[in-house]
Length: 135
Image 1 (cartoon, rainbow, N blue to C red):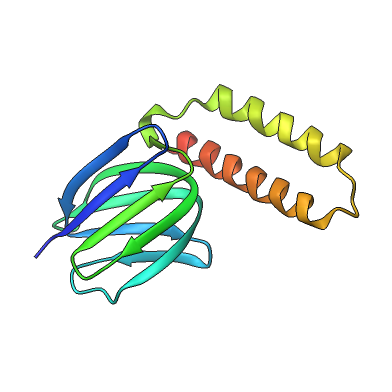
Image 2 (cartoon, rainbow, N blue to C red; image 1 turned 30 degrees about the vertical axis):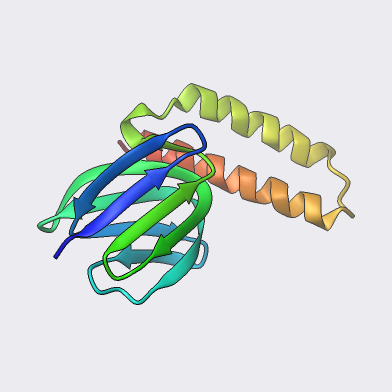
Protein backbone atom coordinates (compact mmCIF):
# COMPACT_ATOMS: atom_id res chain seq x y z
CA UNK A 1 0.00 0.00 0.00
CA UNK A 2 1.63 3.29 -1.09
CA UNK A 3 1.66 6.68 0.62
CA UNK A 4 0.19 9.73 -1.13
CA UNK A 5 2.79 12.52 -0.95
CA UNK A 6 2.19 16.18 -1.70
CA UNK A 7 4.86 18.85 -1.58
CA UNK A 8 3.31 22.29 -1.58
CA UNK A 9 5.22 25.57 -1.73
CA UNK A 10 3.65 29.03 -1.43
CA UNK A 11 3.67 29.21 -5.26
CA UNK A 12 2.23 25.83 -6.24
CA UNK A 13 1.78 22.14 -5.65
CA UNK A 14 5.18 20.83 -6.64
CA UNK A 15 4.41 17.13 -6.50
CA UNK A 16 1.43 14.90 -5.85
CA UNK A 17 2.06 11.19 -6.31
CA UNK A 18 2.12 7.82 -4.60
CA UNK A 19 5.39 6.46 -3.21
CA UNK A 20 6.51 3.59 -1.01
CA UNK A 21 8.43 5.95 1.27
CA UNK A 22 9.33 9.62 1.63
CA UNK A 23 12.31 10.61 3.78
CA UNK A 24 11.84 14.10 5.25
CA UNK A 25 14.38 16.47 6.85
CA UNK A 26 12.87 16.89 10.31
CA UNK A 27 14.19 19.57 12.63
CA UNK A 28 15.36 16.83 15.02
CA UNK A 29 16.55 14.44 12.31
CA UNK A 30 15.30 12.66 9.21
CA UNK A 31 12.00 10.78 9.35
CA UNK A 32 10.49 8.29 6.89
CA UNK A 33 6.81 8.54 5.97
CA UNK A 34 5.66 5.03 5.13
CA UNK A 35 2.35 3.16 4.94
CA UNK A 36 0.71 2.68 8.35
CA UNK A 37 2.88 5.40 9.95
CA UNK A 38 1.51 6.78 13.22
CA UNK A 39 0.03 10.25 12.69
CA UNK A 40 2.53 13.03 13.41
CA UNK A 41 3.11 16.71 12.66
CA UNK A 42 6.74 17.40 11.86
CA UNK A 43 8.67 20.66 11.80
CA UNK A 44 11.09 20.64 8.84
CA UNK A 45 14.58 22.06 8.54
CA UNK A 46 16.15 23.05 5.24
CA UNK A 47 17.04 19.82 3.48
CA UNK A 48 16.13 17.22 0.89
CA UNK A 49 12.89 15.24 0.65
CA UNK A 50 13.72 11.91 -0.98
CA UNK A 51 10.96 9.87 -2.65
CA UNK A 52 11.27 6.08 -3.01
CA UNK A 53 9.50 3.38 -5.00
CA UNK A 54 10.62 -0.24 -4.61
CA UNK A 55 13.74 0.80 -2.64
CA UNK A 56 14.80 3.09 -5.52
CA UNK A 57 15.04 6.88 -5.32
CA UNK A 58 12.61 8.29 -7.88
CA UNK A 59 12.89 12.00 -7.08
CA UNK A 60 14.45 14.56 -4.72
CA UNK A 61 13.23 18.00 -3.70
CA UNK A 62 14.89 20.68 -1.63
CA UNK A 63 12.66 22.30 1.01
CA UNK A 64 13.73 25.40 2.88
CA UNK A 65 11.81 24.47 6.02
CA UNK A 66 8.11 24.17 6.83
CA UNK A 67 5.83 21.47 8.22
CA UNK A 68 4.76 17.95 7.32
CA UNK A 69 1.51 16.25 8.29
CA UNK A 70 1.94 12.48 8.19
CA UNK A 71 -0.90 9.98 8.53
CA UNK A 72 -1.19 6.25 7.81
CA UNK A 73 -1.58 6.74 4.06
CA UNK A 74 -0.74 10.39 3.34
CA UNK A 75 2.09 12.89 3.78
CA UNK A 76 1.53 16.58 3.10
CA UNK A 77 4.62 18.81 3.11
CA UNK A 78 3.93 22.53 3.44
CA UNK A 79 7.30 24.01 2.54
CA UNK A 80 8.48 27.59 3.03
CA UNK A 81 10.10 27.13 -0.37
CA UNK A 82 10.69 24.05 -2.48
CA UNK A 83 12.38 23.10 -5.74
CA UNK A 84 13.52 19.94 -7.47
CA UNK A 85 17.14 19.34 -6.46
CA UNK A 86 18.27 19.36 -10.10
CA UNK A 87 16.86 22.93 -10.46
CA UNK A 88 18.82 24.46 -7.57
CA UNK A 89 20.61 27.64 -8.62
CA UNK A 90 23.96 27.40 -6.81
CA UNK A 91 25.00 30.94 -7.80
CA UNK A 92 21.79 32.44 -6.39
CA UNK A 93 22.08 30.40 -3.20
CA UNK A 94 25.75 31.36 -2.76
CA UNK A 95 24.88 35.05 -3.14
CA UNK A 96 22.06 34.62 -0.61
CA UNK A 97 24.46 32.93 1.83
CA UNK A 98 26.92 35.81 1.48
CA UNK A 99 24.15 38.35 2.16
CA UNK A 100 22.97 36.41 5.21
CA UNK A 101 26.54 36.16 6.51
CA UNK A 102 26.88 39.93 6.25
CA UNK A 103 23.61 40.37 8.16
CA UNK A 104 24.96 38.00 10.82
CA UNK A 105 28.16 40.05 11.18
CA UNK A 106 26.17 43.29 11.57
CA UNK A 107 23.43 41.83 13.81
CA UNK A 108 22.97 42.97 17.39
CA UNK A 109 24.44 40.01 19.30
CA UNK A 110 22.07 40.67 22.21
CA UNK A 111 19.01 40.10 19.97
CA UNK A 112 18.86 36.33 20.45
CA UNK A 113 15.57 35.91 18.59
CA UNK A 114 16.95 37.63 15.47
CA UNK A 115 20.19 35.63 15.71
CA UNK A 116 18.19 32.37 15.86
CA UNK A 117 16.23 33.33 12.74
CA UNK A 118 19.41 34.28 10.87
CA UNK A 119 21.13 31.07 11.96
CA UNK A 120 18.22 28.95 10.66
CA UNK A 121 18.23 30.84 7.35
CA UNK A 122 21.99 30.38 6.98
CA UNK A 123 21.75 26.65 7.73
CA UNK A 124 18.90 26.27 5.23
CA UNK A 125 20.78 28.02 2.42
CA UNK A 126 23.92 26.02 3.19
CA UNK A 127 21.83 22.82 2.96
CA UNK A 128 20.48 24.04 -0.39
CA UNK A 129 24.02 24.62 -1.70
CA UNK A 130 25.09 21.18 -0.46
CA UNK A 131 22.08 19.52 -2.11
CA UNK A 132 22.66 21.32 -5.40
CA UNK A 133 26.37 20.53 -5.37
CA UNK A 134 25.80 16.81 -4.90
CA UNK A 135 23.16 16.43 -7.62
